[in-house]
Image (cartoon, rainbow, N blue to C red; front, side, top):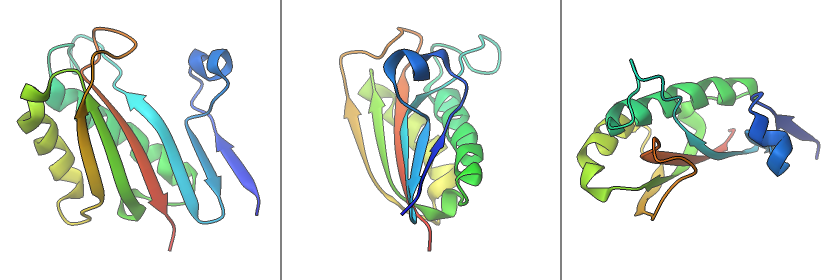
Length: 127
């Protein structure tokens, strides 16, 4: 099977030796992705906006991989504050209420920057 690496242009990709997503056959794995916190549309204290930003951006990555959010079978959500669960769930549910991938949400000590409240990984299987 052929392998397709999908790069996002992030400077972290070369520094850490990874890519945003990898497609092998009909499986697409998407690396943990955080929001682009711009201070206006996506703020450091807004878990809903961060989750929404992540999923919108990953929808484009999945498209480049030859699939869509409809092909997502699993999400893994990491948050630095589980008290923000309702905001994260509301954004996730907006996109996935009918798709219903398996998921988990985990509170962790921290992410690479204190501005990030949420990081999400995605797995898709193209049918």
